Amino acid sequence: MPQLAAVSYLNTLPLIWGFEAGPQRELAHLTYDLPFRCAERTVSGEADAGLMPVIEAARLCLPTLGDVGIACRGAVRSILLVTKVPARRIRRLAVDSASRSSVQLARIVLAEGYGCEPETVPMAANLEPMLGECDAALLIGDPALRLDPATLPYETLDLGEEWWKIARLPMVFAMWAGRVDLPESAFRESLEYGRAHLEDYLERESAARGVGPELAREYLTRHIVYDIGPEERRGMAEYLRAVEELELAAK
Image (cartoon, rainbow, N blue to C red):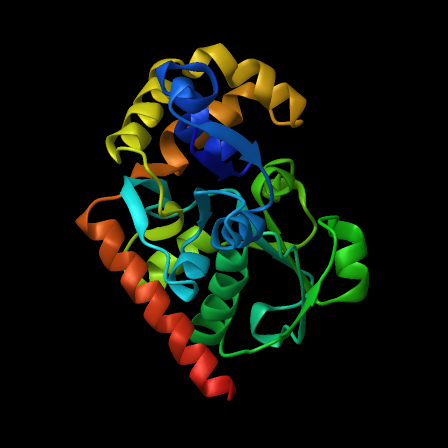
């Protein structure tokens, strides 16, 4: 049976639910890991395909699979840059490096939107220690969802919204990628099953992650875009181009 490496964040549940609990569970075996580890396990052969950051798929020359993934068209709510100084004055940025797509997105947003290129410091996803060491903190996934930006005594940038201001295109964070003996339609069918059975897991999974059910529902149905169409692919190409420019400038 093909081995699929997936991420256990809340936003992946609609994508994987068919493989986890629906008809597609007969087609593949799921294991869970951090986003960048899904890429490493796929390229090493531990997994046949993984749900991974698009930057990792591009760097490893792994083909993307199907027309589903994790994207946004504006505010995403789960990629937050929290800063205790004006954004243009950020010199040290603490990052949860579980998703390298988000770290690179933060660098692009700060360089193009605020004219600064801070040092990035990998740290555990805990806001106060991060801000104790650095000017700003990047939190992603479930830890970001557990924050309420309206109540924080700091400025908060939603990086999905910031990307939209710069590019006027969707931001694609992750897609299935690899080389697997599995019909690409299975990834779409797993998503459709997950969407149709949202109420089967929403309350339980949101509680387990410390996220209110109404926020979780809004997040999964309004903030996250799962369909990767032509506009999303243009946004992904623009993002990869911007990353390449940043890396060339750093040499």
